[in-house]
Image (cartoon, rainbow over all chains, first blue to last red; front, side, top):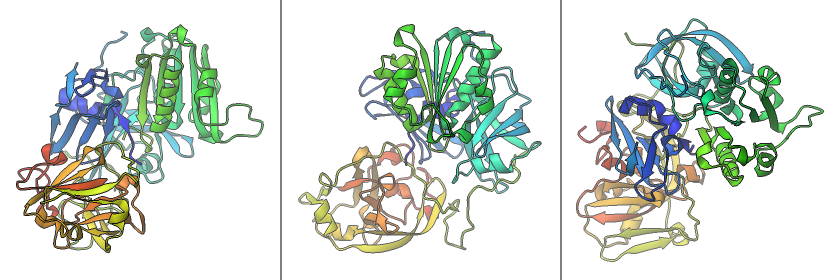
Length: 82
Length: 248
Length: 199
């Protein structure tokens, strides 16, 4: 089955990409406005990239793709992160 | 030093495997000597990276089983079709090197200043970070009352069994054995459900803090049940392990 | 200094010479990879549609399953580096579907339940190189692997074989789908190792 993990599972990658602990950061979904810690977001790992979605409306909030040793990040789905 | 952020090193570092201890037939605790370890918080995890001689790599995350101040240790469940867990639980030997990074995590952590009463809910190997919390509570002399509800398949599958048989003062441990119970068992004998939660949890008006950890289906059932019993969502911290038994 | 973990091999298998594209390893598992939750569309609601031709064309599940089918045995290659050899499928050739649509499009965007999309040249969807597959290894395709039906385009990286596929939108120009938007290659030929844009 597809394992719905949560933002805790990408703590290491977030630390690597942002240089800071991010699982306690509060995110706001750009689609439905739900706010909550990154630790509570729905995470899909092991695909071509890591997809982080709103646990309420499934909107894509963050996408991480590792290309040749560099991690590219797209945060367009987030209305806010802090 | 409540709330002080411990900066995890971003880089991979080499640790040396110390003693290993089989907790159950499927579960092993691995103590690690990490020369550049800067400390950790109860509930955090670390990432492990294995490299084969042709450069093939695999990474997994494991919750830290020890309290801040104790030697770093992880507890790993061997998964039947796992790629990393069979290596860690069967091949890895004292004296071997293990590449890791961490500690990682700032949400699913507990400090004594966070208070309580604490409600800890563990499904299977989800007990690992909660055990770190319990050990830290004891090390700091915290008197915050704790109830631990721990779901396992059977008594031989209970991790840290002896330790949990002798909990510290103020800690109440409630087991549920979902598949097989020993003769004479009078405890819960089913998967956690709303009825069981209602019987076990601290009343919501005591402003309890809940930590739920285990397979995704366990976490979702329990978190939904707690919110249904009036626990505010921000007082329920969750960490989902995949069906693989760890985060990833 | 490069760290090697004593005694660690992973779960890879040796690959027959020339069978596996560069940078891939062979597995006997069938890893489940996803960009989102598994959809569960009841068959009574399921349709496959082709848009962008002279007229839209659509099949219900029963109509789709009444079409001629083929048995396919093929190797599949995921951009995450695993390859699985001799996988067995049953499906309807995309040629069968596109033959019933009048169009002059050069490209198509496959779209799926849950919002996933991926783009392909029409040329790569025809000539016996692509199917809408509903059976895997002799059984109905499980939901976590894309059931009730997924696109199957084995000559390209497997992200092009869209799970939970519901149709094709024919286009004149090539437009990036989900992973292509996030930096993956527009075409995705595993033999030329076209993983990322610019490869």
